[in-house]
Image (cartoon, rainbow, N blue to C red; front, side):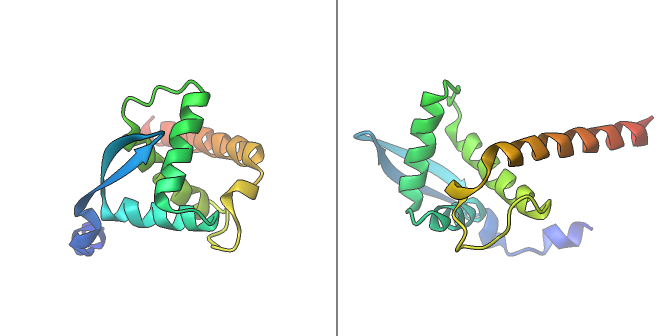
Length: 127
């Protein structure tokens, strides 16, 4: 199992810092290349640049009253959830299908049910 991860291209975990402007304020975000690539894919689905999508996520997070003290972690989780939703069959990996057009609430409800099922299965294995 470990060879699958150990022998992966080390480029994927190389960090890169990107500067961007959010509402006139210049900020820097440092992420691993794997996450930059995933953000690029996500942004492309809605015909945005990565900077535009990050700005949109930031502003919508503020509007939703989220604590975005660790915004970089939030972006990593967004990428991981995106890939997990694809793996679970909740969304398809097709650049022609914009993320903004998906049935968000239904996907969130299914994701929650999947998480509960996985937790129940995990609890049964541990007991």
